[in-house]
Image 1 (spheres, rainbow, N blue to C red):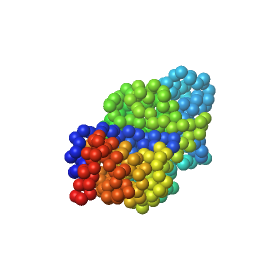
Image 2 (image 1 turned 90 degrees about the vertical axis):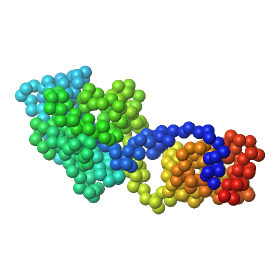
Image 3 (image 1 turned 60 degrees about the vertical axis):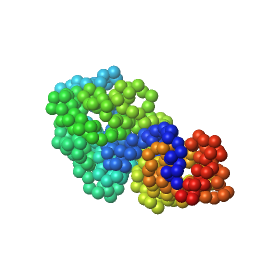
Image 4 (image 1 turned 135 degrees about the horizontal axis):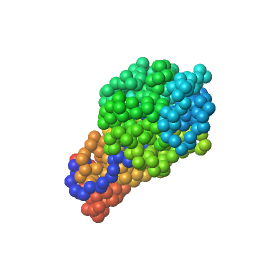
Length: 399
């Protein structure tokens, strides 16, 4: 069946197999993120925003600087870089000790975002999380979720950036001496410029992995240091509710937008949880989802549309689809699917295409009631007059 259809036409219908995938109705993820995650090649890079929700209730880096200014009884400078401001605190003020006290507050505990992040990171196997947060909520969330024990690394004693797993506290931890926290311009200078232990780790990490930032804003100090010292062609993304800020482009980071109203970031949490659910789906889960979607029929909502298209790039997904799809509406819909188009365009044959070729031949070409619809599909995809493809389909069935 497949070779007959490929032989009649050597033109190619070019369709990008990458693109974006609607993981929820609000969040459209780049396919590279999904693929890197499935391949165990994604690092989640977690910032202070992840620890701001209830019951963590910890400050952003800017709010931390503001609270430290209040404690030191000095005016907070809105226009000064945060690390420079913290480096200018009075000499008799123990900036690091006070910062540790604020972050280590006993009434703060992990929140649903921490749980979603550690589950998502561990879904493909070895979790890889890097955080500039000082709190240990990611570790406690991992323990509470009964996930396998993970290694925890705290700067400056870091693993190799291109071969690590676990949770890396890049800028220190409340569980270590306060002096090891990276807060001031002098601390950042040592970590990224003079001793450069953070830079060495990150350079290797960015060379090896795709990276997704979660919980950062463009004015977080680390963003300035990343822009100064790291390769410009690395694969960096950020989940953000402010995707139109030009500074992301300057930093070489691709924004992945989600909607947020005031302080409601529930769309971010929903996307992380759905991504994790998808990543953990087994064969029966996919069969159930495919059955429900196909039985409902096209047109599909964007989330279901992208899910089915993704599954049709795999042989097992194509088999699930072929098991349930029997209507002309689904044949018309399949005409826009790359793995189906390959049957008619001379593109590289795949297992998924072969499955769809058998589905097309057995369900549509071989059925007298659907034979006319099959001829019309061939005409549209091959570009030949209807009478010239009739014998093609007939010979395909007898093959």
